[in-house]
Image (cartoon, rainbow, N blue to C red):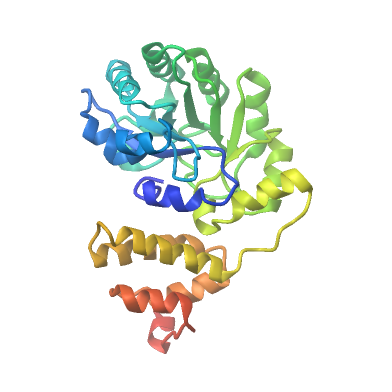
Length: 326
């Protein structure tokens, strides 16, 4: 979710009552303690001015807690940055062992550590010892790097290192985001650990949530791309949990409204062309799960001006024959 879930997006996605907490984009740690401005850039909710307005909470404007995410492989450097985050007021740290990006893995970050469970444990231990019992340290893994042979060992390493809970994306790094997600493997991990385990991967709908819950044994799930594709999905899941009632599917107008609000917020600090590019990125996430979003994307994918783009979200889409043929 790097480059996607910034503070504006977190604000918009947490306004409906469905998410219990959220994480930042990862703060990349290499070999040095980073200055406060880097933490504030990735997590504006951490800034004293915002926290003062929310009674010292590190949370979105609607009150949903925000956990700071760290990514790296050097235990000492990660520990130093964990202490820095603690000094700045972080209320939760999440360690990323799941990122499958080639650039990140080439530089010994994310899922690359899943080749060696001992390295996972050393990183989690270093960060846990750095912050003690003052704030929780959590972790996210995949089912392995090239295969699943070390899935249980890596999960156990995270718990042994002091992780308070573990999110498991139900695929290996080499499987990327290709379906299917192997939710039954999360059940094996859950049976091995004593800490809470949270399922992640390919939970696009309420039916997917029920299947993932049934196969993994996990009541709790983490949503990534799916909440961009359908911003109302968390609230739909929460409503079903509480009442057993299925809410209607998300209408296009709801999706268009959140894209419109996103654009108007981002225009406060970003150039118009950048905002349009970000809108296309988000609409691209929506189009795989919604026919109307797919039509709008096809009609607007070459538009570079913001006003016509926003008008195209709300008006009748007009797709040229040339665009359809591309």
